[in-house]
Every structure is written in structure tokens, then in C-alpha cells.
Amino acid sequence: MSVRQVSVFLESRPGHLRRVLDAFEDADVNVRGYSASDTGDYGIVRFVVDDPVRALAVLTDIGAACSSSEVLCVRLDDEPGELARVMGVMADCGINVSYSYSLISTYIALSTPDLDRAEELLSGEPVELMSQADLAAPLAPQGV
Amino acid sequence: MADMTVKGAALAAAAAGDFSDLPIHNPSIECASRERIRAIQLEKLIAQVAWTYERVPWYRARMDALGVAPADIKTLDDVRKLPFTDKSALRDTFPYGLFAVPLDEVVELHASSGTTGKPIVVGYNESDMAMWADCIMRLVQMAGVVPGDRAQMAFGYGMFTGGFGLHYGLQKLGCMMIPAGSGNTERHIAMIEDYGTTVLVATPSYALHMCEVGERMGYDWERSTLRVGLFGGEPCPPGLKAEIESRMHIVCTDNYGLTEVMGPGVSGECLASRDMQHLAEDHFLWEVVDPETGEPVPDGEMGELVLTPLGKQAIPVLRYRTHDLTRVVVEPCACGRTTARMQKVRARSDDMLIIRGTNVFPSQVEDVLAGIDGVTPHYRIVVESADGLDRMTVHVELKPEAFSDSFEDMENLRRSIEEKLKGVLLVGVRVKLVEPGGIERSLGKTKHVEDLRK
Image (tube, rainbow over all chains, first blue to last red; front, side, top):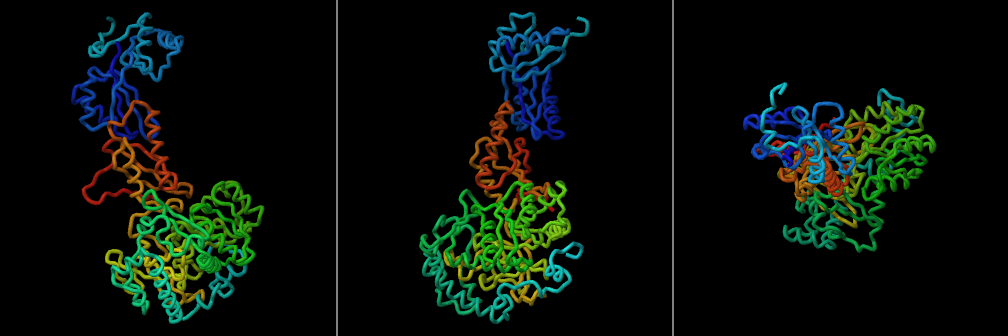
């Protein structure tokens, strides 16, 4: 169970990320998490959304350079040591996490070259793997 | 030169308007009457056209097609009967197609970047080398250089004509050459101090860089032995030269030339008319034409400079279109010379850029990009000046399908474009990747170049 991440090439200049976000809003794409990193001149912005197929279509429509890839989405409990535990599983098994970023609440996205093995390892741990459908659902109200 | 310390009596007198102590290399030519200069030019033109027609099939075919024979050249105006030569002629005949002498007579080759992947190659025999040195000896003496001066070369040697061209001429005059070459500014400054350098040969932008590095090192330019700067390789705006003169406490002149007709030394600045350069008229027949029609412009008006080297044997180029815009005046100069003076070139009739002394055409960038998967043909060139050095950035548009969700892949693509551009342009550039559609499209003539240098 992995989720589809959508990545887009953006120049590091005012208004460029906003243009993408406006397009998402117009198409009713809900962003559940994102990471924006840069090299100075340009950056890659990665999104986890409720509907990656629609998000890719939106980006293609506006002529953006974009792609999609599989990442693991994991829900952690909101307490100290949770993140260390997940990363520790990867480290102990020699799996390199290329990058990782947090999503809504305590959801984090993980990119690794060895996705299946990472998934297998994590499913044996007390963390919850999230599916694309989970991401489409709104957050449960506080206290539930 | 008004507000600076001038070193040496002759330069001090020149600064005060008395040029009589500055040597004139060849007064029988440089101070000859207009009639005598024209007579020399005509005699040499007739011989040059015959030499070219007899020895270079490429020219013979073009002259035959125009129905003009060497015998038709009877006056200087008859030069207009001859075909023009453009840079493409040297490219199309690469490498030896325009040579008029057997290769075992050629003693040196030089090259400059061409408009596409192939460079422009030129050759010189002994006679050409002597002509070249004669031109250099004239212009360095206009700046007050004398035998015994110690001249430090900050041009790169290599295939570029600037390095060896100035080197041989200065050495023949009797200067001690210090062939430092390009790069390592701190070392250059240490050499000036250690060897007692009196003359610096550099591009003006590199001289300014050297000046600033010296100031940061605490080097006292006023007390330095350095007296004269000889500039070339790129246009030198008057403001830049004045700044270098006052900060480095030297007198600077710049010369004009181009590889296709010889190299540096076609004309040189004297200290009496600093916006102009004296043409070596016995070695080059000049014309000024309308760049659109190729017809001569009225005397003294702006147009494109067209040059026919006279007496140049290994590659005898006829009516070379320089694409440099200038005007030429023939009134005698206060320095004592009577040779015609061309206004320093500030503009061109084409889109050539000069980056750190190297000629760059936008079409070269276009050709490189056309051969790279993953980018569109759209581009923009931005040229800036930082610390006195030219910086060229090429904005290149990524194709949507070339995007990969990996900085490593993107950087590899970017760096591979930089490498390919450097291989063709012979000058380092920075590539900036922009989004698809990120380069502005226009319906008319697209503006590819933004030159922010002052």
C-alpha cells in the first residue's frame, strides 16, 4: 500500500507555486501534504493529494513539467519517539530514505528506492500505513 | 589622463598635449601624405588581387562569376568590383580552403570561435608574421612603449590571436616579454612587483579585476613600475578605461583587430585622439559601407567596416565584412600621424557578443540546444559584469517530459548543457533551467540577448 506523489518543476520565483495551487483549487484537488525544496534557481515541489490522477491532469493542462512516483504514507501517533521509531526501522535494515516530509496531522511521506521492502517492514510495526483512499477522507474532528 | 599620475617624461608631456617625445614607428608611412598612402594602397591592392585570383580557386570562381579579372583593378574605387567575404567563407572552406601558399610555408596557425561548432582557422607565413609585428610595433609605441620595456602578457596564449600577436610584436620592438598567460591574479601582481613589469597586456575587464585584487592585497599601484596598459580582445568603454587609468596609475590604449584579417593590430589608439584608432593603412584597405546595401556611405559617416588586407599572403581575404560599425576620418592627427582614424567600435550590425574576449553568437547557443533532448529551442542569454568579469547565463527551457523527480537528474542535465555550450563557445557559461513556457515568446523578432554590462 503506497500512495502516488505528484512532483512539479518550478522556478524559484514569486508566483510560480501559487499558479499551481490556484490550478489545483480550480479543479478541486485537495493538497494533503507537500514539500518544496530548491537549488537556488529552481526547485522541485512534491505534493500528496486526494486525487493524484486529477492533479497530474491539471498540471499537464497548464503545461508544467511534472511527474508522479510512489511513496509510502505512514500515520504516526502524536508522541515523542514515533518518528525515530519509523526511521529506525529503515536504518536497521539499511534502507535509505531519499527524502521525507510530513503531511496533514502526523502523517509523513517517505521516498525510498526500495518501497516494497520498506512497506513490508513497516507493516510489522505499530504504525498505520495510509492508502490513497485514506487521504481523500477529511481529517476526523478533534478528540475523536 | 587629466587627473592621474603619469609615469615617465614622454607620457607626462603627452598628458600636457605635447606628443613630440612619443616615438612613431614608421614615419614614412604613418606620417605620409594622403596621396602617397593612396598610391601605396593601390599598388598593393593590384598585387593582392592578382595573388588571390591566381592562388585561391574559391576566389577565382567568385570573381569569374562576377566577371571581374585582376586587370580590372585600376583605381582604389575598383575594389567595389570585388566580392565581399563573410565569416561563413572561412567556415565553409575549413580548414585550409582559402590558403594561398603551400602548408610547408605556413609558420603558424590561429583560430577563433566560429558561428557553429567549427572554428575559423587562419595561417601566416614569414611575411605575414613580419606584417603583423609591424602593426603591433606601431600601436604599442602610440601608447609610449619603448625598447627595453618589460611586457607582461595576461592574455591566454593558445589559438587566440591576441596572445602571440602582441607577444611577437613587442619582442621584435625590443621588449622583455613575461609570458604569464591568463589566470591567477595574485600571481600576476606578484610578478609585476618581482620582475619590475612596465607594460601590461590584458582585456580591460581583466585589468580592472587585477586592479581590484591588487587594492584588496594592499598593492600600491601608484608606486608600481607598471606604466602602460595595452588592451584588446573586447571593446573598452571610455569610462572603464578612465577608471583603470586613475586607479592603477597607468596610461591605457586599446587596439582593434580580428582573426579573419590578421588579429590585433589593424588599428590602434594614440594618446592625442582617444576615441579613435589609427589604421595601418598600408596593410589594410578600409571601406565603410551601408550594412544593408553594401554600398559606400558618405565620407566620415557611420557604417560597417570592410577590410582588405594588403600584402597578406597565406590567407588573402578580400573585402572582409567585419560587421563592426564605425566611421573613418582622414584629417591629420595631433599626434603627428596622417593615417586614417576609425572611431572605436561600440556596436555591430549583427548580434555577436564578446564574452571575456571571446566572440559568441546566439546562433551557436541555438545549435547546441537543438542537439539536446529534454530542452526546447527557446532560450535567453543574459550577460552581466561582476568584479570586472563578464558572466553569461543561458536560460534554457525544460521540456515537460524531461522532468524527473530528482535533483540529481536535473543537475546532471543542467551541467551537461553547460559542458556542451562551453565546448562550442570556448567560454564558460552558466545554465539556468526554467519551466516549460518560461521563455517569453514574441511574434516579431525574438530578443534573445539581454546585455546588462555598462
